[in-house]
Image (tube, rainbow, N blue to C red; front, side):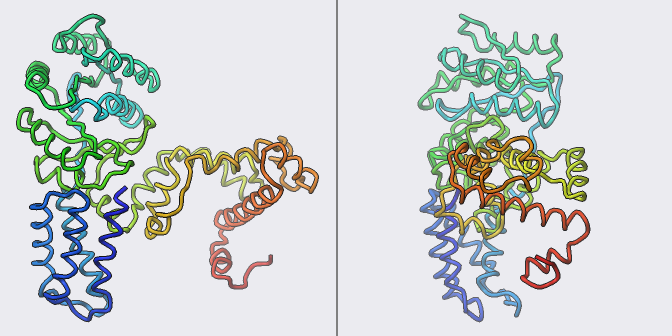
Length: 446
């Protein structure tokens, strides 16, 4: 996500390294590269020019503190302007109503149907809402079938009316059904076209007028760049929607849509799609996105993802086991499963400051833990419970059973022992010893 833009901005800021002060000459050179980076990311030329003009105005005349280099100061100003460009703060979805109605609009292929199911899953799992999905695309039978399949995956009822070609009538009956059955939120998936046409606009306008939804969300494929922004403007001129959803932000996107759509339509980006799984949507946070674009990581999002998987009771049990030195391979496997639930490993590591650039040329597969899991599953229950049993012959059998090598098995066992040692130190108050060990200092017997 935004790797190319991040690299080009980083190179631009390097022009100011070693400079004693910010001058019109070195600022002009840096901002020329910044503007070029934005244009390469498919940012509208006028917006890119306004952006760099604003940065230049703020940068010139600023005093550079002895503890802050000109490059660092420029990064700070660009960060502030990127955040401003994308909207400063995130805006939550409005789900007040009995039921709350959410209308989903967009072109065909933008990911409306998938997002509808993801949103239903989000509201069900994170907001504890009873949700009804409505199949309002009456032109594509595949869209109705797709919504049924996705609804079943996330455990949400899908309202359909076979044979009907009246999306307004279907939506009205769905709302009545929701009131009867106690659904708190109704999400209406609508038809799209390959391009904007009068019939589609008339239909979505009629749906909005009749339903009076709490939220109308425009779903757009982030990979289409400025075309996405232009489409959003056309929809907003007709619909006056409440917010934007950017899908496929994890793909080969240059980032122009994310950076400029807010300034063009004056509506917030509310969600971003970051993968195929039903939990792969995030609230859009402008500041956090600016952090990631500038290689600062996104620790807040990483912590939030960890907290979502955090089980307080399990943590207490684990702490007791660690204190008694009873942490075993079953516990180790359980911790890996929790990490996997947080999302793509490379994306998670990219949230750590400085790691994004370090990992950009490294391919980390989604099944990065596959061999580790295979090795642990090839152990007997007794071996998983008591790693001390793992002698040479047992390790050879485990390697053969897991399709790995003895070297792989030995490496995992060492990693496990190191992990157990560190976790026990932290749990039993040995943080000082742990810090000494990490610094390579004495203070711990090996």
